[in-house]
Image (cartoon, rainbow, N blue to C red; front, side, top):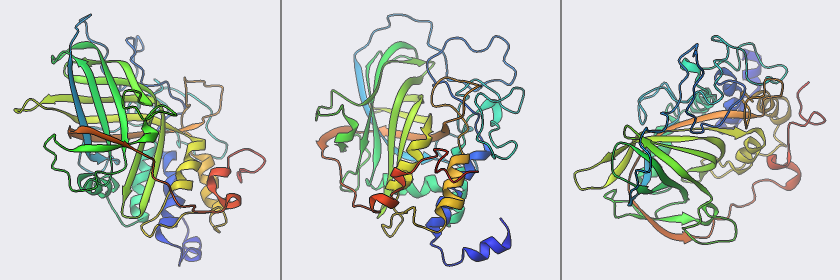
Length: 379
């Protein structure tokens, strides 16, 4: 960005600059479509780039089991260039295309996207959000966004809980169930010894219920292969919070995997874990609408940066399909990945969803904007 433009942005809140950089960052990684990290047995017969896929289901059948455990996310990693949970590269080859390496894109990139903007990472990994968080971290002067939100998760301000049922306790199990719950906070410093009962946000449950047995996000046919839990999910959610700041991520079509580790006390953890999913472009607008900075301020479309810079870059960002690859169709989502470690916990009471004070009037609320050609702000 040229010096003149930088000069024109002086005085703008740092978090505005963070939003300025959030989606253009997505142009540097990920491929243009995505087929959920569904549990697929067959990789391409002649892989050309060593496609990064999750383990296939185990050879065992009807393993059976009645073990159950619950874990809560404690540490997370959002950027490849920082140490932390999931020591390996972030992302999976969600669309089975090694875009730019040996193959073309799996969807049509937005017109005006820079050459190479939708290129995949190593082994075809789709992880456009990596650079997104790199640039947001730079703009907010927080080099490690994962560490920033990890601090608040460790203190009990927020977490994501996973319940595994029907597990046989062995390295290989052909069918277990995974349930995914969002927690808006423990309310105190957790002990992290397996006794913490985390309150569960009602939004984690099927609409109209307050029943933990009816989670909104789940995979009834997850499995464990060589000690690695693998689950395919049509949707999921993560709410990162700390102080007055808040980011809500609505995720779609992807996978969760993690190494199942049994401690000396008999309790299970999920370590070196990974979530690889997508964010639909319309949910990027939702994310910005619900974003609050460290002072609790919202971001509105009336901001001088919105139409020509921020919205333009949002609409240039998609690198992948929200569903199966369609090379002849426009990309309509941004690939996302997060590494994490989760430790023994308990499901607590269901609590009503926390209301979020109105940030912008309807006419300037980003949730009411879109990338439709008539008003996308993209030539």
